[in-house]
Amino acid sequence: MTAILRKILLSTALWSLLVNGAPYSHGGCPSGKASVGKAIYFLTNDAENAVVAVPIASDGTLSHGTVTATGGAGSSSISGSTMMPSGPDALLSQNALTIVGQNLFAVNAGSNTLTMMSICESDPTILTPVGKSVSVLGEFPNTVAASAKNNLVCVGSTGAKAGISCATFSPYAGLSEMDFLRPFGLGQSTPPVGPTNTVSQTFFSEDESLLLTTVKGDPTANKTGFISVFPVNPSCGCGPSSLSPKDTRSSPPGTAVLFGSEPIPGGSSVFVVDASFGAVILSLDEKTKKASLFSKQVIADQKATCWVTISRATKSAFVTDPVVNHIVEMSLTDAKIISTVNTTMANASPGLIDLKAAGNFIYALSPGNGTTEAEVLVLNVSGGQGSAKVVQSFGLNALGVGKSAQGMQVLM
Ligand SMILES: *[C@@H]1O[C@H](CO)[C@@H](O)[C@H](O)[C@H]1NC(C)=O
Ligand SMILES: *[C@@H]1O[C@H](CO)[C@@H](O)[C@H](O)[C@H]1NC(C)=O
Ligand SMILES: *[C@@H]1O[C@H](CO)[C@@H](O)[C@H](O)[C@H]1NC(C)=O
Ligand SMILES: *[C@@H]1O[C@H](CO)[C@@H](O)[C@H](O)[C@H]1NC(C)=O
Image 1 (cartoon, rainbow, N blue to C red):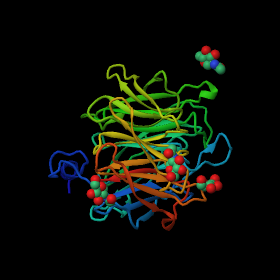
Image 2 (cartoon, protein in one colour):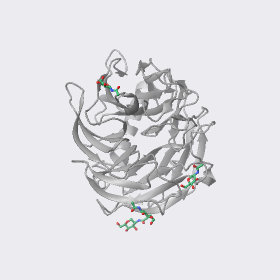
Image 3 (spheres, rainbow, N blue to C red):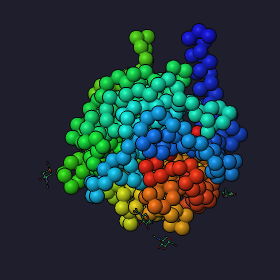
């Protein structure tokens, strides 16, 4: 097959996937969107790092699952308060793995590499490594973003060498070598001492023209967190897409420990949680690439609100806290609290970390604390705003998953 033909076939496959399988497609599906995902994915982040894939049944619930080694090593940050390895939230991040099309990308925080795998079309729990894992050039990679439009995958590292590096990818050949490290200068160690003063999440804007990264400040050290914005230089006759070497940083007043984020569909605003008080909506100025505060909402009984997902079914955001056993639903217009789901009875551990909305359901990871069992809670949101209900607590002991687990993605 010629390279060009391959490329055409690939983009046709990608297009049909986008049209038929994406959560907010308007073609393909009679209802305009898929109501149930195919499988969930997260990392064990153990010394022998692996990706866990658990299939989703037609009623949204989970069963069985597979564990596929990445060939790399996981790691754990050090808790600044106990000076012991942390867990839950070993990586202090959102998006420790990511999916575009049938391609999955996973960070190996202990071996400073990125692994690419392909997801089998007929069985989404069968994962096959593609090409070889590549060095991220930084230390303690903890978050990854991929853009199908640009064939670009970018990793955030938050150890002694912290910053952003990118590679191109192809479904057949895998990853190219990473380009270079765009440093953040956090003055961290490897592994980092957190949770403050670390990279939280890297992600592409909705149109994939910008790479955004949230970095936590450290209020006790008078250190300001920021949101970094790197433009993507699109591909042209002269070569593939690349990420600009230089970013623009801003520290919206009122924010301190920016953590998980997701662009709000259909605009230039981003929903961002802040571990020190709750959540904000930031507006991004397309000219200056600076973020400013649009709305701010304190969650009164929170301890560390760190992860967020936006549900297309409810058109609202859901946030979690590893220390408070609840999931809070918030408005995409002003971040006001819509409802609070008390997860105490469903979750053996004190709280939840990474979560992902998919169709009429939300999947939230609770890695446990080494004593309590790791679980994924499944919430049914098909009744719209204010309707979220836990419908399953899926125990992870059978899959050998422990307190280092991190990340959450869903294949639609
Ligand atoms: C924090 O930094 C600000 C601005 O640099 C300075 O005015 C203030 O005195 C500092 N506070 C502490 C406690 O160091
Ligand atoms: C959550 O539910 C538990 C168990 O029913 C209860 O003890 C606790 O007070 C509830 N928390 C809140 C904030 O209502
Ligand atoms: C884990 O959490 C449970 C439930 O909150 C608690 O009883 C237990 O002491 C914790 N274990 C550790 C090692 O922190
Ligand atoms: C989810 O909620 C809908 C009602 O909104 C209900 O019909 C359906 O059975 C629920 N699914 C599960 C798995 O509980």
